[in-house]
Length: 458
Image (cartoon, rainbow, N blue to C red; front, side, top):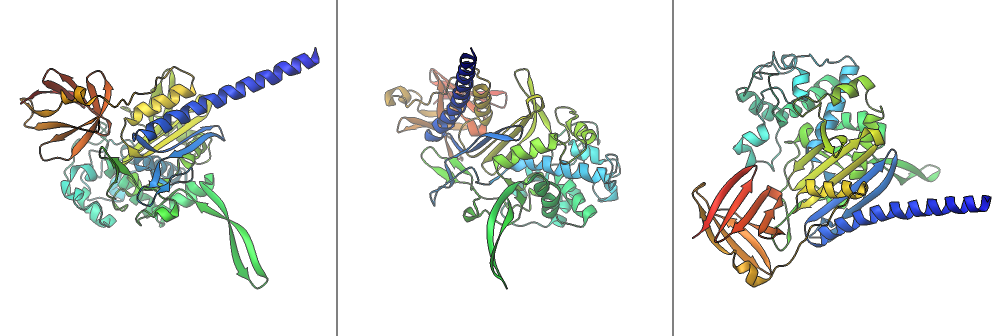
């Protein structure tokens, strides 16, 4: 009887083990499949409580030098940096150096409406301050140059307010750039130093490495903490396990131009790993950084946005987290408090809708049916029907569709060509820009951002 019980337990333990293994094997297959079809390069980590249950990287950190990415590869995380910045602001509030009601004119009285804009408004993107990165086309020509904080603040100050502070939500990088400057003013320490002391060291976002030093008594080896999450202004260095980002031009992964990190700063300038990001958000919800009251305040969602936390559904589950986009990096961080489940996906090569990859990962994790996308090479004769130049009455733009090696690409007047991925029947997509094209008889409908444009073959 006892032996039988033990055997059943063993069998049960074994079957649940193989089943769990099976789930992560399938996840790995999905990401390998996307990588092999030039749809994705990057890294995924999944953490259950304190335990990492999946962590793997795909593709290259440096394609030219053939440096493959691994789970310690560091990527730019873009706007997920905002959540780090918000945590530091909440800490300063707990230290009584600030309140949520403190007005901006205490620090930057020249910014329009500074006397009405509160720290709360900055954290919730409710200020009416223009987004200096996306608003000012002159900036796009100088994204690779170092800019002083004074210069950027001058630019932010020069804009007129776009709406009454507190009246509505409008995402603006300027808000978190300003919060980064306030952190520096109040602590008299750099943003980078604050990040290390207030978050990185507390949650041990790094590795321990053996370092040997010569002393009077001979060589002494000590374990030294090496941060893998940090803010710096220097350019990417792949020798330091950092990664470049890439776009796919239909044949090859092409390296993206690099922005100077002085521009995104506290709104998007942090470098990290997917493992560190899952550790960070678990630590945040576990009370390592701020009090339960502060965490509740961060979770307060107003018009879809908390204090640098968004909430996104997966079925009946509600995840908290943030996304990021910088250069060709796309990142997502999510945490489901009920199960203490955190995941982070960072792509440094993006040729597929990242949201669809995340739906795939979570579907597989929760053992829900998820068919892999189909990347069929179509018959040249079949594709020839779609090639040609198309014009539209809706927009003054011509688009030329051409075929090469069984794949379609599209090129609009005066713009670079982009690859079209087969989705179904006569539908093709260009995921990076959220474009869908549905072909009919000598015509197609272009769908982007909820708008539809009709094109007819000339």
